Image (cartoon, rainbow over all chains, first blue to last red; front, side, top):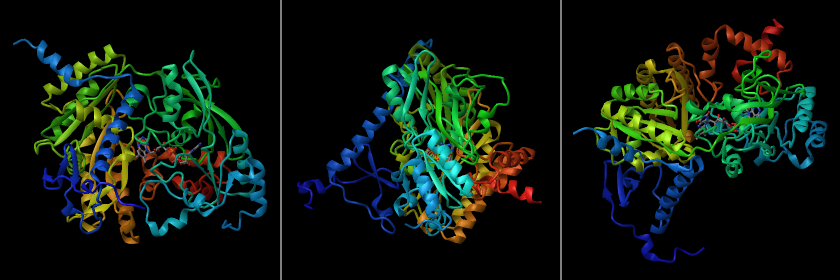
Length: 89
Length: 502
Ligand SMILES: Cc1cc2nc3c(=O)[nH]c(=O)nc-3n(C[C@H](O)[C@H](O)[C@H](O)COP(=O)(O)OP(=O)(O)OC[C@H]3O[C@@H](n4cnc5c(N)ncnc54)[C@H](O)[C@@H]3O)c2cc1C
């Protein structure tokens, strides 16, 4: 078993604290603050591409679910905009 | 081979003759894999619930033959399908034979004229819908276990569907099914005699009786299902509220709006929002003034969904809601069909992450009682967490069960650090389940809206909830299953046989 090929993949971007319990390293991908994973469960090191792959495949899964249940998804924002524009004044 | 002595070589060879030797499974793996369901249970007691062997029949006739053998030898039989049931229904309490129906997973017929299909009880809804897709048809039974629960288990539990407010729940969508009684006799139950009838007044209505019994009355082998045209459009707006009361008012206004495409609405309480703010990518960045959430869902023809959707948006805006945007709304709804993706970890009181299993109490509660039930349930959960640092309150969802907003599937989700459960904490948990059920019954609700109520704790309240109807349940059980071979130990039904002795 060899290690991951690209060493730089092991260096995640710096964490930005988003709440008192979560950090963000990649846009819209949140992680439990590492200080909360010291006693019972250790945080795993993922290569960057794997983190991104997991997030992207979650997106694919949700897209698949939409297609599975209906031919089209209607934007509620569009409906709200229509209501606002119909409003007098 | 490690099977119980009562399953003699003779029994095993009779079963092998019935289903084929390769479909009688006796290995440790085959048996332990069917010893539990996702509902948490102390790991040190796992061995108590292992079956003696597993059979995997391929037809109604084979199931009937297995039943005849089991009945003749008085061996317990537990039907098992996806094994996702949350009330231990598919878990053998008295060892015996697991009848795993997963090999019966074929689509036997698709009737596009009457919009029905006939399938084996071991088929999964997702797989079925892939077969139906080229016909533009859909089977809309949509539990949050959609990718992994199966049609026979939906019959065994009389399941609840996320979009049941529009299309009905399992009991409405299953038109009829072949059913093997504990004696091996095969009957067809439905609305009346015809397999594709949705409303009949002939005779007793046995379909309800033979659904939701948790395998205590027999085994469904083949079912005829009602189909709908695959919806043109889906809409699922989510809104944020600064307090629970406004959200509670708004969810009922949405349900009361009389929108024909309304498929369901969900109310999230403050504890749920706190949990999501901790562990769900959509809610982590939400501002602190978000204290409760509501969503409404519509399916149907695009023009109708749009028209109804505009009405929802007006109602929510007038109720003071803030729309959370398309990305969260669409993503969160799509994730609801498959809750196995829920992050299975919780927090100790100190905030440290621990692996946790998910437990869900799933009562049916009237809208008027939701606020009070929620407070009483959280008090029970808080007390438990204070005493044992292995329980975590993950909050409450309330989903409409019907288009009129009469009652809500109300689930309190509790994280349990299952590996740490010892006898003391398990006893406390069972008592908490009993207390949760007591609150539901006292408020005029029902202990379970979807899973059934045969786990330790809640089951004690079933006679209280059902009153005289529970005695009739005992009479029915004794009449249908004279030797108590079907899933013995469940639903306090052993009492049916004690009465007889007296
Ligand atoms: C993540 C998750 C989300 C869930 N969400 C929902 C939800 O939204 N709505 C809902 O209703 N439930 C939900 N559940 C619970 C569960 O999925 C349902 O109870 C489902 O109907 C069980 O189906 P199954 O095929 O897994 O059955 P199993 O667990 O195998 O069996 C369930 C019961 O039915 C009996 N049974 C199985 N097959 C037969 C048969 N052929 N004939 C007679 N009896 C049989 C079993 O003995 C058992 O008592 C959820 C579970 C999970 C894990």
